[in-house]
Amino acid sequence: MSTPAVTASANAREAGSVRTVLRWAVPVAVLLLVVPWIVPPYTAILLTYGLVMAIGALGFNLLLGYTGLLSFGHSAYFGVGAYVVALMVKYLGVGSMELFLFGAIIGSVIVTAVFGWVCVRYTRIFFSILTLALSQVLWSLAFKFFWVTGGTDGLRVPTPSLLVGLVTGQGDKTDFMSHAYYHYVLVVFFAAVALMWVIVNSPFGKALQAIRDNETRAEFVGVQIWRYRFVAFLVSGVFTGLAGALWVPLNGLTTPDIIHWSFSGEIVFMTVLGGFRSFAGPIVGAVVFNYLKTYAVGYTVYWQLLLGAVLVALVLSLPTGIVGTAGRLAARWKKVS
Amino acid sequence: MDVLVIHLVNALLYASVLFLIAGGLSLIYGVMRIVNMAHGNLYAFGAYVTAWAIGSVAGGAPTVLLLVLLPVGALAAAVLGAVLEPTLLRPFYRRAEEYQLLVTFGLLMILEDLLRFIWGPYPLSASEVFENFGSLTIGDSLYPTYNFLVIGVGIVAAIFLWGVIYKTRFGVVLRATSQNMRMASALGVNVNRVYIQAFTLGCFMAGLGGAIIVPGQSAVLGMGIDAVVLAFIVVVVGGLGSLEGALVGALIVGVVREAGITWFPEIELAVLYLIAAIVLLVRPAGLFGRP
Image (cartoon, rainbow over all chains, first blue to last red; front, side):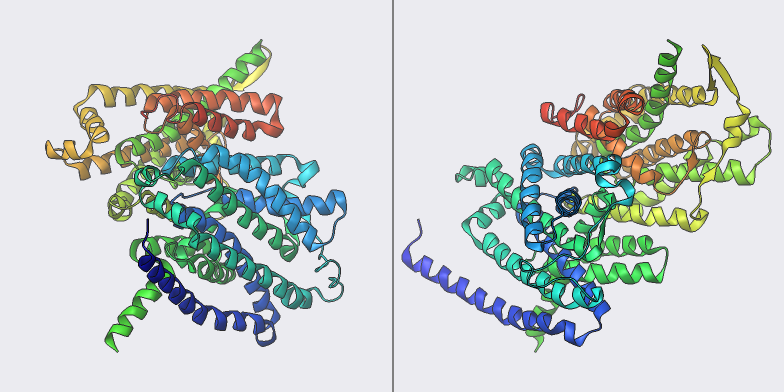
């Protein structure tokens, strides 16, 4: 029971936080919109990859950051999104991006519902291992059923047509990817961010955080833990599935590698890099990780060593990630000036 | 009939190596409550060191000498473990489990590339030992004798561990720390020392698994990552932290894998993961785990 005064002040605080967020978000959004005309196509395409992964990491963080469940199996949902698209091309001859996204959402809802039904009974380490094991089931199927999935050769996906055929992928592929497709991904990204923002600030999102912080108390005040975790799992998986669907046309090929559990590790890595305690963390982390990995791979064959060392150093000294550390530095700077 | 015997021996072969890997993983979890994602890479490290010692350094030496060199990989893995625990893992005991998983995942990436850095991207083999042992006949088929040595080592390791944990003072301290770390510490157990000993022993077992399997196969990059997932299945089936569980889990996974390779190769791995999922559903703590 909250008195009107308390509600009013809470509303004011909410409004204040929305205003601060918009002060950040609007310039960033405008900058993102004009990026393809400023930077070379290669950089823009890299950023597209980063934005796609940001959607996936955002979904992943609903579980890690807001519900307190560390999934080591999110590659499964990413892979489901990607393979649904590839199979739609192979068997149905579909070429429309909207149908791809629709199919990927349906596919990832089904798989996430089944996996989630099993996994959310557990927490902590068991949750991590169980999600990992289940994702490996999908990996081994994609790996072994080569007459359906192409095995390690994978499946090719041609350039799709966007906006129910208004924009087709004819002509220069680089140009298409760095402009039309970039903006397509950007719009989906904005929608995903807005949706996730609403989710984590809704009563549902608050309940998840209550469960994360204290399961027993949350249960005591009437939160049905199992159901909330299940829905969080579902939403999280679908976001990652959507990212998988957006990733395939960009990459042009999908292989079982993206379902292997080490790819789940990369999703975890991105989120921790950005900072899983903040909303923007996974977004920043995914974009930065993508550049980091691309340059590390180009720079040395021992890129895993480099990334592993970065991860260990990060967890040791900067557990709040890029966003958390930047926030702390900004706060200190404000105090000094 | 003899085909069945061969399948059975093969299953035991898998089970022996898996027990060594998963037993170490389980021991470490039981005592330290850490799931070491890099555990498979310690197994790979053991395999690489032995393959290097037997294949490159002492190539052509008499079989007896090569056999003496076999455990080198296990010792190297133990030393690596003894270095890693105090430097990398100790700062994480007081922090959330997520961070422990992350730091060992980072370690996994680092070790994977260290192997590539030291021994290059090509497989390393130690087949000399394997060949020197020759083969024996089971019914009408030939079967490599060396595989029996691997099974023997697996059995000896299981008995040895059982002895250490249930019959020695060190085992009592280990079990006490695993049951209640604070209480053990209050009673004068040097917990830091127990942790380093347990971790070293676990790494030794993983390294031994790698060292004895490498003559029959080869040391390749990525073998650790594949092995650790199988080891997860074993400990999930058997119960995290339980050595009996690791033994039974390894036997189950060994048999299912052998059956899978023979009769349902397409879904062999899927069946294994599904078994793990089903066991977790029915008995969340595994067959032998403490809830």
